[in-house]
Image (cartoon, rainbow, N blue to C red; front, side):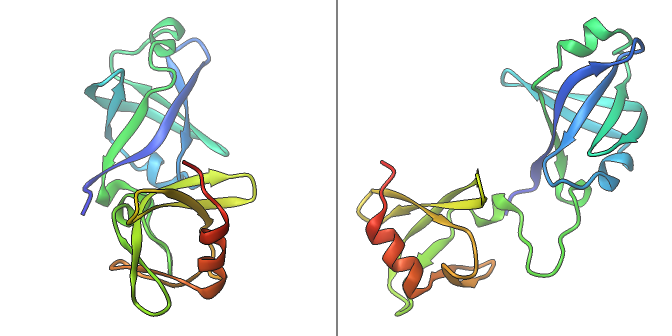
Length: 173
C-alpha cells in the first residue's frame, strides 16, 4: 500500500513575498491548509520544506515555504509535485479510493476470470478512465464508473458485461 501521495502541484508565484499557488490533486484544500511541512519533488529531487504561511485561494492554496522569499525563487518550483503521507492526504469519503491504491489491482470478468490489472487512473474529458493492461499485454481505457465496473473494492475490480464489451471494442496500445 502506498504511503506517499502527490497531493498538489506547484503553480506560478503569487505576489512579491515568495508565495506559490498550489493546485490540489483532490480538488479539496482543507488538508493542504493544515500542513506544517511538505516534501517538494522536482526533476527527480525531493526536498522537505517547512510551510511558513498558507492561505485559501479557491480552488487553490497559496503557500510560502521557508527559504523561498522572492517571486524568482518561487518560480523555480513551478511544476513541482507536493508529496505527503497517507495521513496528510485528503480524507476519503464513502466509496472513494486513492488512485495509488488501485494501481496493480486485478481486473476480473463477471465470471471471476482474470482479465488484467489496473495500471493507472487517467483524467478524461468527461471523467476518469481506468487504464487496464490485459493479460495478453494490450492496454485498454474504460470509463471508471459503476456502469462499467460492477465491483470496485480495495482488493479487485470486476468489469460489468457492458465494461467487457467496451474492452473488446477499444484498444489504446
